[in-house]
Length: 264
Length: 334
Image 1 (cartoon, rainbow over the protein chains, first blue to last red):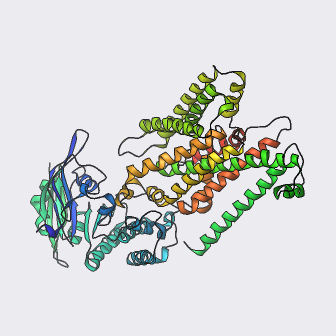
Image 2 (image 1 turned 180 degrees about the vertical axis):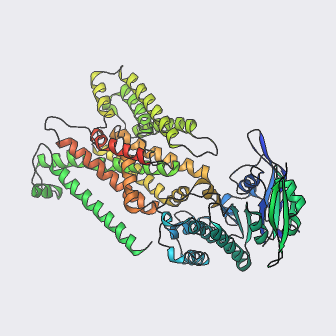
Image 3 (image 1 turned 90 degrees about the vertical axis):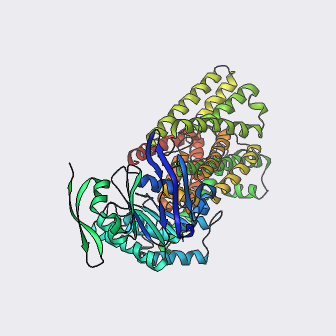
């Protein structure tokens, strides 16, 4: 059973100073699937992701990656298994696309880190997989938001990890670019068998692209399961305090939230 | 990297090297004793008169070499500090690391006078002083999990700098006339350690530490794309931060110990290099080092010949160019 979980937390609590953000959280991320964490602002979803990414140290509890406690592994060891895309990654504008993607090889390198042929092949593959090949010599500063996001995903791909974590990968993107990024992630999941964990705000996109959804509120899991299990009137009321009207998208048989009202 | 970029990088490097050689030749040539180019060449290959030998080998050449070394040291230190803090304005001079090193050097000189300086003890003491200043800055600036604000870093640096200078001034009050004059020159950034023994002391420090930092180019590159991404890529941030900042402090301290308080070289050289060859540390660190050497050698040469009656310390010449450049950077940085 444990082997099917690529990532899990056990009694995880995280706090900023005195304020408890995540409270005794137990989640399990199925291997080879797309999992999305949803929840209102401040529910602890990004904090949980940051803690799994070892950017924030948890107060108590443990995080397991492929069955091992992450603080027992070296940070480089984890980076070989799990790639992370922060919410708003920053890069100096003058770095070229190819340079940035090449940094994805860092965990696999020692010392000066000269790129071998094998690394170059992986980098070229990552550029192609994200459709950024023709831009490889362009500076990051000259790209659009959607293109930039694809470069970061390419960097995560070059890391060659089984697991990719993304914190709101569609923020600041327009509708078509949001779809483009999520379709790319879906392709990677199907073709490359990568396990993908992300935080999303848009419920319908979460439903459409996820195999598994975890809904959170006040640092606790409210419901988790398939989109049909989570996207219910009852759960959305408990999580977002909204009165949602749920329908089924007949093209893919996934639930969609047609409209919603506030519950006063 | 594409071919166009490659050609640009090579052009920049060749230009810097040609400039450095030209200034070196010009610098050997300039001074009170006039020497023709043929005189210089014949002296360099060992056919000079006693006076020519003295002028070139004991006076001008050591001074030139030490200026270049100091420039390389300070520029590389600045480039590293900028990489670590993610702040283009980090410079060992402005942050007070140099004054910290200088303060310890001056205490030593106050006790033993310039006559009995040990070239082993001197860089060590300077390093201790630089480390003290850096530790103070670290504890005042860094908050866990927060990005360092440029303003906070600069203000702390200015405060540490002022504090160290005040302490230095206090020590100078107890000095005799000769020591006091030395202190004045030191503070103005006069390259005083222009003897071969200082070169022998400084050369290994600069070579080893530059090599170490250059070896860590990738770490600095990764830090450039943000702490969170760096952690995600498996960089042990705390460990690398300590290693690299200690190296940067040591490099600045060693340079400052024989070069006096020199501001702005650690700011201008890396910034200019980044503009010319881009932000990849593997390409830009050597350019920054060479530019630092070039800048300081030029400043020292100009300072030597600008006025016929006296020398202007290199530090002052650099500051004349450096102040407007610093203000420009301050205005354009976020």
